[in-house]
Image 1 (tube, rainbow, N blue to C red):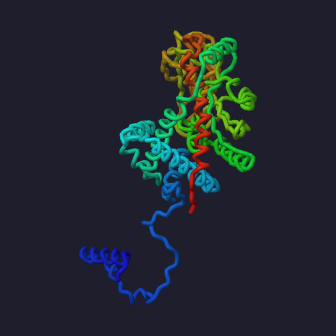
Image 2: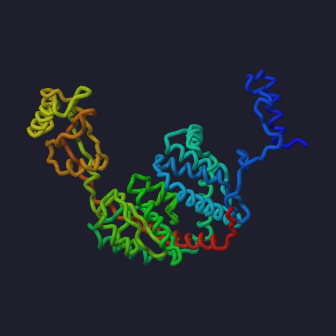
Image 3: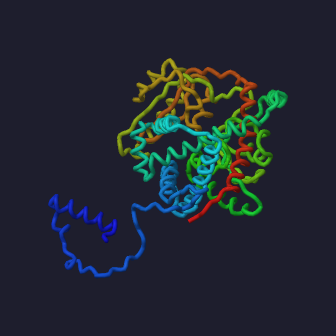
Length: 441
C-alpha cells in the first residue's frame, strides 16, 4: 500500500512530467544509487506542528512560540542577542500559557470577544506602525510572524480586561473619603515632584526569588542597551499595565511602594532602575518624565523662534569649516533682537526659518534648558553637524504656561480603582496557574 508521502510524491512527479519538467526531474533511481531499504533518520516533517505545551487540553505549538517570538524581536528592532533568545523563548511560552488560561476562564464565564472587536484593535495597531492592515500583514510575515499571532494576543488582552470588569472590578471599593484624602495630599504637595513612570513587574516567592532576580537583571541590561521598554513590558510584566506597555501615568513617589519611592527621586528622565524588591516580586521602572505637582512646567512654553542655518559642501573637514564656524558664533553673540535676523543672516550666507508655535518640550532635551534660559532676542550657541548644517535658534518670544490643574475627583478615583483591580488580577491569574493542568512536551 502506497503511503501518503508516496502519493504526494507521485502526484508531484505526474505534474512535472505533464509540464515538461527539465531533465533533472527525470533522473532514475539507478543514477542516484539509492539503497533498496534505506534507514530514515529523524522525523522532520514541515507540515507537522508538534505540541510544546498542553494547557487544560488546549495545545500550544512550537510554531505559536516562534511566531510570537518573532513579534517580540521585531518590536525591539531585531536587537536581541543570540544568548537571550532561549530565555526569551521560555518567557514567550509562559505568556502564551497565561493567555490560554485567561481565554479559557473568560469562556467559562461566557465572555467572548467578537472577530470584529479584534479587527478594530488590530487595525489600530497597524495604524500605529503607519501601515494599512493589508501592509501590516505583509510586514508581520516578513518578520517570520503572522497576523493570527498578533490577533491571538489582542484577543487575550481584550478578553482578560472584560473578565476583570465583570469578576473583579465590581467588588473593588474606593471610598469618597479616600479620594478626598488624596486630593488634600496633592494640595499639600503642591510644587513637589511627580513622575511619569513605566513599570515591569515580575512576581517572585521564596522558592524562585534568585531566578526571577537574575531574569530581571538580564531584562534591565537589555533595556539599558536600547531595548524597547514598552515591548518588554508587554511580554514580561505581570502587572495589568503590561497591555499599555507598562505605563503607570503620572504618580508621586508617595503613591508607590516605599522601595520605589526611594529610588525614583534620584533617577534622571529616560533612565532605567535596577530590579527593586517590592511586595510580591521585583519591579523595574523607567522614568519617562518629571514635573512639579500642580505647578507650571516651563517645557510647556510656546516659543517664537527664528532658526539660522549655514551649510557646507559635502566632504568639508572640521579644519576647513572652523573659520566660518567661528565667524558664525561671533555673529550670533552680537544679535540682540529679532528685527535684523534676516539682515545678519544675509551677511554670513545663512538661511532663515521662522516658527511661531514651537513647544519647548518638542526640542531635543539638550536644547530645552538652553533656550528656556535665554532672554528674548538672544541666540543659542551653534549646534548641528557639517553634513546636515550648523544651526542656531534666536528666541523672539515665549508664552509661559499656566499652572497645571490638579487631577479631578473622577481621575483619582479611577487610578485608585485600577491599582486595586491590578492587585486582584495578579492573584486571579496566580490561582488559574495553580489550578491548571499543564503538560509540557
